[in-house]
Amino acid sequence: MSEADDIEEIKKQKMEELQSEGTETDAEAPEEPIHVESSDHYQEILEDHDVVLVDFYADWCGPCQMLEPITEDIAAETDAAVAKVDVDAHQQLAAEYGVRGVPTVVLAVDGETAEQMVGVRDKSHYVSQIQQHT
Image 1: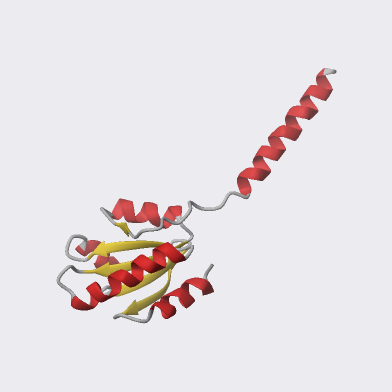
Image 2: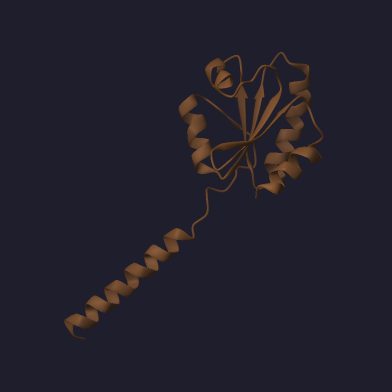
């Protein structure tokens, strides 16, 4: 094999590597809700997943407790990641998203807010919102 053939083979391999990198999908959505630990952690979640359903909640909130099994089901059954943000622990993050009441559910698509819903809705409502963006 000549040097020119070697160079062509290397080019071909490199091109295949570059093309395969472009087809990789985002991190697989976890089967359980992710409890947000900080603003940086929240940003990592948004960067790692194309579609994220974010539940802004408080432990003392009755409707938030009603929403918890719904978010757990959504995490297990859909391609969306589910993030849970405790508004008491992360007041600044809640303020950035204009959360004035809990529960507030934000659907983030490609890191941007696509929908914001206040109060508890049926599971089917959240699932249909996710399906519109996946």
